[in-house]
Image (cartoon, rainbow, N blue to C red; front, top):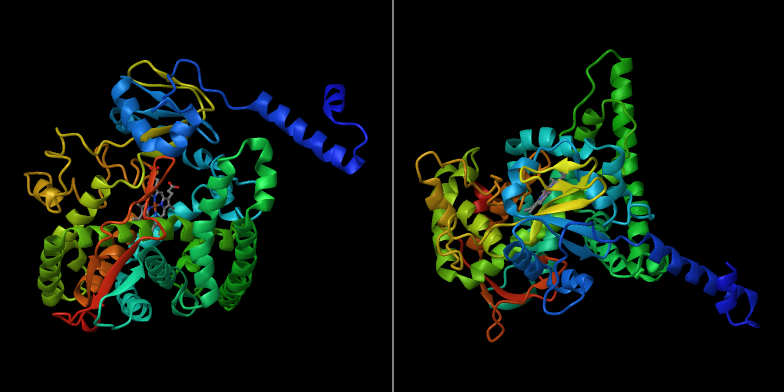
Amino acid sequence: MEAIQRVIPQGLPVSIQVVIATLLLGFVYSLVTADRPFAGFPVITVDGQSPRKTWLWHGRKAVAEGVKRFSGPFQVMTGTGPKIVLPNRFADELRNHPSLNFNKAFAKDFMVNYPGFEAHRLGLRDEHLIQDTVRVKLTQSLNLVTDDLVDETAASLHDVFGDNKEWTTRYIRDDMLEIVARLSSRVFLGRELCRNRRWLDIAKSYTVDSFLVSRLMRAVPSFLRPLAYVLIPQSRSLRNAVRDARKLINPEVERRKAAVNAARAAGEKPPKVADTIGWMYEIAQGRDADYVAGQLSLTMAAIHTTTETTCAALLDICEYPDVAQQLRQEIIEVIGEHGWAKTSLYKLKLMDSFLKEGQRFTPMGATTMHRYVEKDVELSDGTVLPKGSRIVVAGNFMDPTIYPEPEKFDAARFLKMRQQPGQENSWQFVTTSPAHTLFGHGQHACPGRFFASNEVKIALCHMLLKYDWRFVPEEGRPAPRVFEGVNAVDQKSRIQIRRRNAEIDLDDY
Ligand code: HEM
């Protein structure tokens, strides 16, 4: 403390001295407690950059080069400390390992102790509430929600894109975020709330803001994070979102509880409501649950990822117009003959393959399967993953032994792979494997992927038959936003759209 006093210029007002002393102490503390790389794992750098800048700006290249350069695990230095990257061959042995924790892997990345991050905190308190709500309840109700998805897709496309038969330029990420927020909310919360402007704004902004605030906070040294939190305007929006979400959702939760209690008091069976509030209530089985944090958590897991996937698919549709025509033909044949029957979405096999190839060709993340190591884990090659470390598994999307001509976009690639004897179920959009980990793999593989797959396919059916799509002439494919190994559709991405005469009326099947 005396050393700190000596470096503070004398004669300054006491309040300024206190601020300087606090910052200096924070700085010293962050140096002492800074996460250092784990011994025994090489740290990757590329292009002469520091380890941190390597990860921040060249994450994808770092992972690809690390896998080639080192024969085993290596480390990347992220803004929140080291992460051990494991080559893809370890995906299967790690997928259900009992000493690897999914929720704790994100605790450090998503500033869970700050107000506004209630949704991110929830998984640490109640590991199964959201996972089971999606895995057990939503997935089992998929056939029941198709009509709602079709209805909301038709309404939201009409509201967002309109009927202009001339080419118009659109910011596609904003448009898709609005549409996906409406579709997801229709199923999660029902017709009324999915069109409530404040809820939609929360559903859209909470997802984006929470990623943005945590990303910006990760980019500054830990001792400056409290200050960064105060200065980043979106952290206020996050807090407001939680406050307003409580105002919108809590009255509904109370109404439900009262109805259940009244039914029980009358000796009757409690009413069931098929949406995520009702499902969470059933999964919670009387234990104390924060339904609003749960709703935000679901919204966050569902909307950002599904928006990215749909936008990426639209960019591929612009890039490969001949594929767009083949997809249209498939939609006309399948929906034209079977309508929105239970099996129709399954029958859209070219579309299924096209979506999976899009994920492979432009993967959203260079790594998945983020896990926190709770106890030392010994791998089959003798490597010990130390307790307290965080691991990720590298993707393997360009392996020519699995994907012939991996540099080529082949919309029918997975359709052909499914046609090999015994392979029908191995290469569907929703199937996870070490060779395709974009929905993760193992016990924490995305439980929402079956819903997401249906949602994206229904949206694509409408978007393809009702509209033509192309890149803005002279602009071409918009460049992605690349950050920490993530490949996202840039918010400024523009493409053009015009209404076409659909061959069949999808709203009337
Ligand atoms: C195309 C869209 C989506 C993509 C690409 C995606 C991707 C992922 C990935 C990579 C994981 C981590 C898996 C792992 O580490 O093994 C995950 C987990 C999760 N996803 Fe998705 N997801 C999508 C849509 C959804 C939707 C629509 C929902 C909800 C309805 C959802 C709910 C969840 C949940 C709750 C988890 C955590 C699972 C756990 O705790 O074990 N996701 N997702």
